[in-house]
Length: 486
Image (cartoon, rainbow, N blue to C red):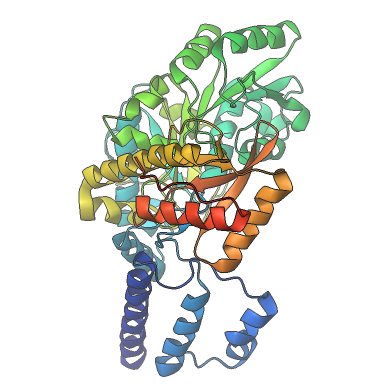
């Protein structure tokens, strides 16, 4: 890099950081719309994309003007009115980690391509293993004792993490599958409310969707251990081999936790692989007050835990963890002489454990969050958002005509107003058009619900009261006497 280009980078990066700092401050204060959705063609013209691609020149004052236009179109996840999807309002120091990783570009799936990034990932994985209740791995160059410790890796998202965990389960149940293709009698048992990435993984692993067996659940979608035992025995009697049982911690739609200890006991009795999708809810492990909701998670064979949700890391940063490191080390089998060969190794190669060949230094995002505030700050955040959901559900339930689906167990609240499913979507569209509130919707129990995923630390009870007022106005419900959140 020339001296001139280095100074240009410093100038433009400084301008970008200033623009982002203003964006963060404005968003946190609730200024501007939380969401703005102009037509794509209009936005492409506003950003002058085609000319910039052809001609370049986006630096200095032009860059500053572009960033102003771009950030005006960005969805404001730090805004008090953001409660739509399970994506973090990232802690700002995590963004510094993403910037450092972006410029250094250390593709650290092999140690020599990013020693610092690999060291951070190894230690973070050990930290997560300890929170689950498993034995962390010894730091290289010490060797793993067979079966004595857990293992894991960070991946580009929870969908890849779920795929990786189920690939490990397939290798355990059917060691010849990598060479010969999977056995036709393999099945995966999962709740019907499981994240769609579970069904995708079953398809990608060659099992076919007919291999996905619906686990018995209650009316709210929680897996029922007693009925699960009968299903597992019936599958065995029918000549099927259960490759894995999947449990939610917590479910995507309603944020409910499956009873992991009872499920784990049923799986242990039968020698079956238990996979816990804790992408969203595993962060409750940080809280002494909330970790009981994951009681029994240590009985699992694999766990997925997304840092870019409740651990406030920028996307993407998801962990796939296993109780026995050998299970993950055997998930994939590959030949690439330029990567896999005998060598003096002062560190650790993550490549054999992940789908990715080129893998970003994802751990730097989470490490910077933890290093800035410590795990106590994240525990307090998880507790705050969970308590806010409990208060929001209580307030919504007291509003005449409003209905709350279930008592929240996480930071997710599902509710609906009078009217049919189409009416719920009409109200959501009206809110989004006004730009003050951004919420999502989901199906639960065969009905459409409006849904809050309370991710932004700026959201408080006063903001939720404004949401109730706006919903009441849009639905033309009469205003009841004022009631306080509690």
